[in-house]
Length: 152
Image (cartoon, rainbow, N blue to C red; front, side, top):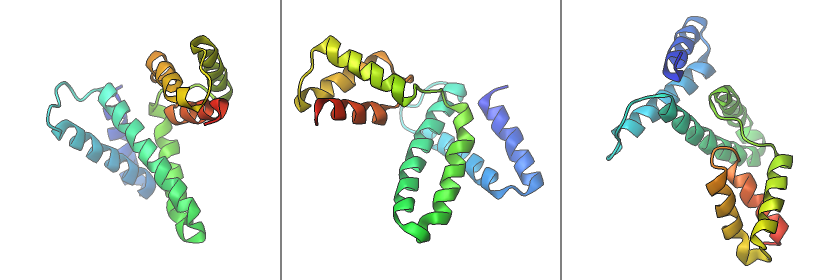
């Protein structure tokens, strides 16, 4: 069953059970998919790859927004909880990324492999890791760990 079919079935169930949070997040993803296919230069099918890319982008945006709502304290608590639900709900369609310990090991090996020293080498190390491990690691985590390791 494709992601599109799964989301369609989930939406029907959410409507039947009056699950507003689930309904909202599914509709948001469908809107983002529609925007993606309307972009100039879009070619291809509406397939699982497109859905995964859209979901990954959406989750990244919502995680950032959630962080901003959490910084607002009590005023942002309700929206932060809603965004936490959305990112958790959509996680099942995202590829699993390496945990922090595994990523840290990968960063240390790349620094040794590239003989990188100092903060000016951070971009080179991050680029090397992301090129070889795209989709396997969280880019923001890699960036943070590289900068910590190189003193940036």
